[in-house]
Image 1 (cartoon, rainbow, N blue to C red):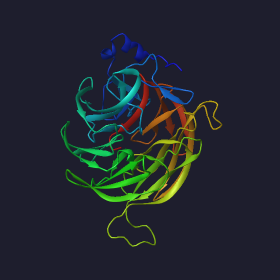
Image 2: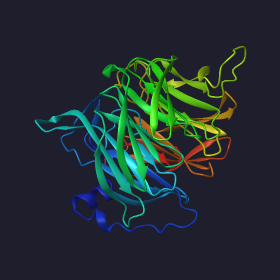
Image 3: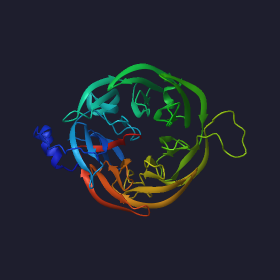
Image 4: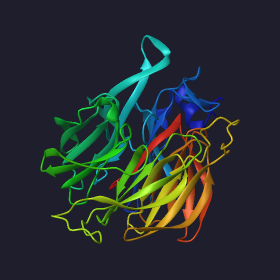
Length: 399
């Protein structure tokens, strides 16, 4: 399978990426950041390193205009290995973080080995640029920045830990780690509650969700764990703070996998709780191999990306030639399916515009982000944004 060559890729090859025109940002601007992995290819359902690998990139997008426009694209390390939540955008959109969980093996460029790099990107610079590269734990992936913009957490999939960083402006300082005691627990994604006092961490290696307590820059493991589906992966907390949702991947064997809803209020019926004790209270079936999910900014809708068998070998009985974007309405802890639309193969992350009318959905095979319109009742793919490499993670501020 060969990567399609986009205009931006051609400019990169010619060393002209820095001359790309920057779209002026106005009051309506909304920053979305897409990380792109140039060192992988999917052939017959198997991920490998392509002969024509390109360098990883980051694409900065204005999602506040219709259609969305690319602001800038530049080199920065990234990896498709792990949930497509390896991107975080500061609440004030001043900087972004990109985690790289895998890199090419220096001893054998046909293989990959775990990475530990965390890139800090100045989004206010003209053009935006990487201003620091930090070390996290081994295999960093899921990222979260609290609403106050003072703390970041990084799930380290190959180390069984969560790294803690304090934030001052756009400078990050390492402030310790949470160790789950088992490298194979594979912490994958992390999400703060809006008040910043709690964080949830999915562990797809031992099928658990950990609850962390946050007090300023002090983060502790409460030892409270939830168990729901098989391989809990992407996680997000509603902007309303009342629920969180978790997507499950399963064994990638064609089975339909669920999204679990976590009640964060501690007010589940027929149970007496001391304080707030998150627990899984409901489930909805979505599709094969759930990769990502994201709430709309008002918390009224949830977008979910099932890979839908598009990452399997074409000979597999449950292969499909497209991924899916599915939207649910949210009413308390109840999710109701509203619409779905076909998107590209091997899909990854999804992001909403602030007004809830546009979504971006990544496709690794297409080297593109699908532009999808939503009117509250139906979804329609209206175009694509091409990027260099395969888009592997995407976030906006507050997600």
